Length: 474
Image (tube, rainbow, N blue to C red; front, side):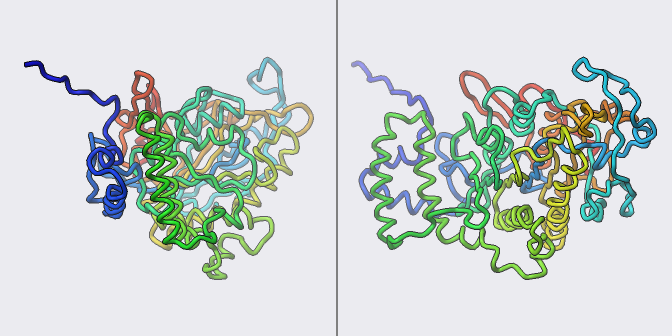
């Protein structure tokens, strides 16, 4: 007697496929709705994969941080003008730089700003950031960052995805893939930027990860999410979504290896639930006048980035896992001062300093800073040398500054160092891959274990690189 061989499914059996095969029809959809309402902590898995891609997942080990706010300054803030003072650079202003840059001899350019020590830690901060300076005891300044690409597109991609050329999942996508979201009525990953972003969605996309992990982008701060309400009653909308879901399921059966349709179905359901949660999360009208002043919402020059920072706080306190803020007021790379360094950096610092300090203070007084990791920085720094005769600085990947605060970070300290001019990282260099490995570690994720199999190989955010920077861990 011959036996019929068991057919092997090319992909794990999903919840929807199980329902289609076992129940079918609208009874299956009813069961699906019941399953969807189960709490994230009790939801089951099918073939080892979560039935809800954004359900809360256990970290590899105990986490110090639960969520991330990344304050990205596109264009490249100058390390020697912000958080890395260089007295020798001031003394040698105008002298030939010790190294050629792109084969050219350039002269050293002293910082036009003075530095002062702040807090009990005595960290040096430029007069550009008088408000952030008041928070230095909650900050760890990394003065020895290095990266591989001196150009904006590659530098931004490397900082966000760990790869400067190919399309790879973003840091926020990897984090939500590894941990899920604590609020299934809001996106797990939100990116906020009022202006154009170089490389666009590649900076906050999911690439080959399931599409559910890509960032939801918000550009209009006065109307963050459109079309949340409509003329159709919610009970009728529910029936229409159920019917649409059934049609989508029939279409998806032969395309089970493509996550985009499943993500689209999930997005419809998320949008339905967001009609209740999102208006509250994205509305600033309920905030007090004191909070508005804290973030600079009462001042035209700080209002835009202040709204971004306040939205970030409102989102993380509601369980959003990763919030990416882009300072793009006035252009897609406003910190790129090839000329008029003084005017450009002063304008940018004025727009962001007060809101950033407001965010740190607000998180701290609400008890959120202890388990919220805040990151500040750009894709690279600026040369200590003058670019031409225009009093500007060129791109500089060899040694620059970023800072971190909150969740598990040893605060009130400077880590690493550049040379006497701020040219090369000479003490404890921290590559972008090392930064990524450390961020994941603080979230309870082992960067070598957080992998996704695609095109026949296992990928990870740090590729084959990355070392945890233990010296900045509390």
